Amino acid sequence: MTQILLIDDDPTTRLVLKRALQRQGYDIIVANDGEQGLDIAHKTKPGLIICDWMMPGTDGLEVCRQIKQSSSLSTTFFILLTARGGLEDRIVGLDTGADEFLSKPIDIGELLARVRAGLRITELSRDLQLQTQHLQKELSEASDYVQTLLPPPFAYDRLSIETCFIPSAQLGGDCYDFQWLDHDHLAIYLIDASGHGVGSALLSISVFNLLHAQLLPDSDFSQPHTVLEALNNAFQTKVQDTLGATNTFFNEKYFTIWYGVYRISTRTLTYSSAGHPPAQLITPQKNSEIPSNLQTLGDPSLPIGLFPDVTYTSQSRTLEPGSSLYIFSDGICDFLTIKGKAWGIESFGALLAEDPNCHRSLPDIVQFVSQYNQDLTFDDDLSLLRIQIEPNFSES
Image (tube, rainbow, N blue to C red; front, side, top):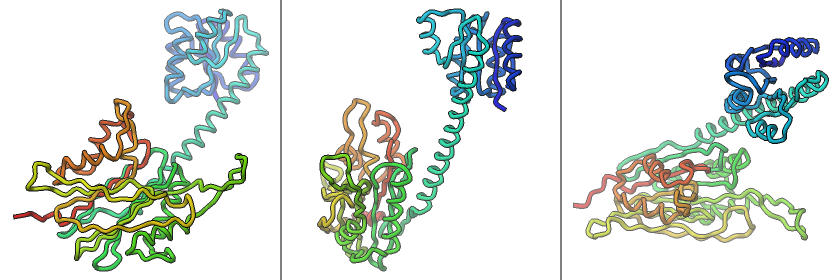
């Protein structure tokens, strides 16, 4: 049974109210003053607190303030007993966090009615808390599952890939993979589904599974543009817009993707993208005052799933030994700085170009970027890949 904590320094009031509540079957705990009441509240976690306003030492307002500031007691229904009937006093009490007022002398019928209402609200609040905790547990499990799908970093003399994935608290839609198509071709891709939550995660996982198992029809996995076009045809889920003046259709779930195929023997990268931030290619310049050359690899095409029959194009580029390719989701560059300005891809690319020899680890890069973030944290999933071409290469 939910316990009720009664706090009042007047023994007569305590006795009268306790008996009235016990006759209704309630489990009552009493406290003689505010300090004792706070101590009991933290130990017993009552469902409802009835507290006198005017008490020596810690008064009812201070008790209410501390209760509402406690993470474990903040949803406890709080009834303030007072002889003060003025509007200003009630405003002060409400601002402090009181949920209800009872004016002295106490009418027992009114007291019981307000207690019943308060306990109903307490029960609803606790049900909501349990549902929220259950949802958070499911989101955490979903996030853990997504991370089990992601490949670990790998390295050998001709290529190395580092990875960094930081899931958002709301569960986003990032997913990435790299896999051998044959002994000479490595496919690398990063997916970012729109929105947050289970729906976005399921969409990105569905795309991941199709690509990883190479089950996408009408596509050549070594030709990125055919992969994107096949994905766009496969993910045309339309929802009717019944709110507008006309019956239009739109896709409420879509995703962006950067897809590339690297040929080891020729150091050739063939790539295509759909609505995704362009990859950043950093090439060290040894005989120049400028330490590195920065190039963006991407195409401002439409995301996958927005419209049918979209045409995508592939481009190719030979990568120099010692160069680094960064592929990432917009979580690392789409935020406001502490000065209120957009950070953006250009700022992120410039930061990468400052370190052409990759002395910074990916977590260090993320930590460095977060210092510019107005919120100091990232609201979206954050995925970052660094592909180093012949990382042990040195020019004599």
